[in-house]
Length: 512
Image (cartoon, rainbow, N blue to C red; front, side, top):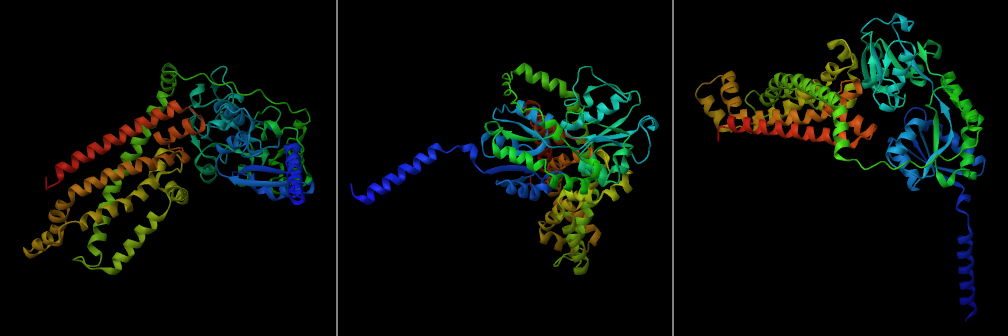
């Protein structure tokens, strides 16, 4: 064998052997997933610096999804993640049958409590008081347990805090009205409730201190401790230990104390006991039709309520959209260049206003007009409050439909009416609307179906609805049977709406 070939073969064997003998746990890079919610992502620069000081690299990605991080760690796409408390993690692992991810170590705890602008103690709450609680089931029961522990309501015996919900209230002697609201939205609408459940960092942003809480969770008793979840085969490895050291570093503590004061509690002492792997989640039994029927039966009262909320929102939104959108669309048609009114300045003003409102994403619009919503209906939370941004968004939406439908009217018919001496009002009522009535009916159908989906966002302000119900059961609680049944109902409702709309269009169409 030539000397050069022998040398290359020996080098290849040496490299191959080295690679085979390398210990994968000695990898100096931690692939880390963080959520951008709350105060997680803001500490990344400090964590990176602390990891570098120990001779490791933090390769991090920030996401805004609470589903992917655990699945990525379990699959090996990431080494660890940080965004969740332990009850959420345990439930997720069981529901998704994950077996390669476990709690690595505890990080911080943000105590939560009940706060109020109007009352100084829970005893002052009047009967019928409005109380805002988290919309997500992972935190839903925390507020209910605080109220239960202070003797203000009774929960079903045996229910756990991590699974409790409104359906578990056995007795509500003070007739409290509960609003399930997103925590971020509650910050903007806190004045609309008598009492609200807040995470301490959010309470701080509203000007509350921990001592202002009317009821507060205790860290030793609460299961809601923040954790870093780690791939099972990496537990105890140097790089995970380095990550834990970074979390427990003085630099991290100084940052939290500087920005959040006593709203953050460090959980170092809970990490003193040896970390042991939890047993893998027991695979769930295959779901049979009887189980599905049972789940749907238990959820049926909530489904009926959600359907009622959706119908209520549509019953307010669609008629008002037609009432105000039809004349607005007519004005757009009459004043546009080439029409028989010819008012270019008026058209530019109306066209700009319509484009401005339509350009707002619905969620942003809902948040932006909270003061106006409160002015109109007296509150920014609830089903009625959710209809205000829906109406505002639907009016220009429908106006565009009306404008386009009127543009499709044969110009010759209008000129014939003008030649016979018809006034502009007669042309509008007897010619334009008469010729365009089937197109307007079709536009109403499209509007209704479209805003059925818009109503899904209503859950953020406690508006409920069938879409919000599907998200809460399917996305948060992983009850896919209930979610698919809800989707089936929604599809059926859409089909019914479209069928009714098509019938109306055929009856109104003069060409048929």
